[in-house]
Each structure stands twice: as structure tokens, then as C-alpha cells.
Length: 69
Picture 1 (tube, one colour):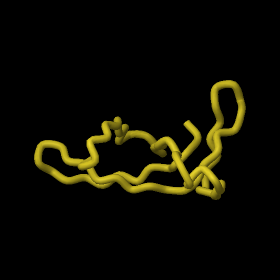
Picture 2: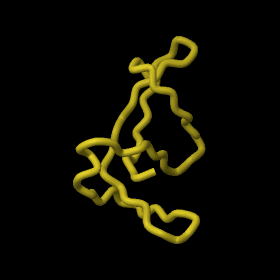
Picture 3: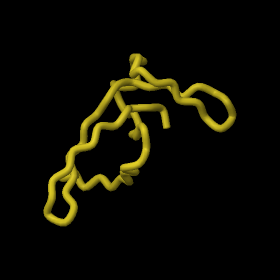
Picture 4: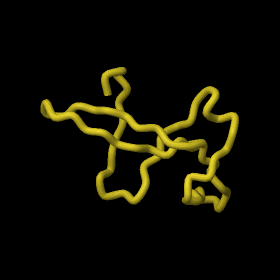
């Protein structure tokens, strides 16, 4: 995206997550899906974030679930 943040988007994934930081971590939100870690503990979700990116001069938009990852 234009902020200089690099991230990997798996276009075949059902859901994509992005680390929740700052105030977004204060209140958990129901995002309609439950995430579970490999050790069977729950992964908290805090809402959604849409990021814009540019690849080969094309603009793309991807919505991520903000999570404690």
C-alpha cells in the first residue's frame, strides 16, 4: 500500500488477517468467524481493515480481519 507496509495476500484464502495494533485492540468485535491457533487457543478479532495496494500499475483493495496475530 502507499504507506510502505509490505504484506502477503493469499487470494485463495477464505479469510486474511492483519495484526491489530493500538486502539483497535481495546474492544473485541464479532467478525462472523472464529480463529483458533495451533495450540487450540482462541485468537481474538477486533474488526476489519481495508488496504489498498498497487501491483504492476493496477490498484487492488483487500479487506483483512484485524486479529491478535
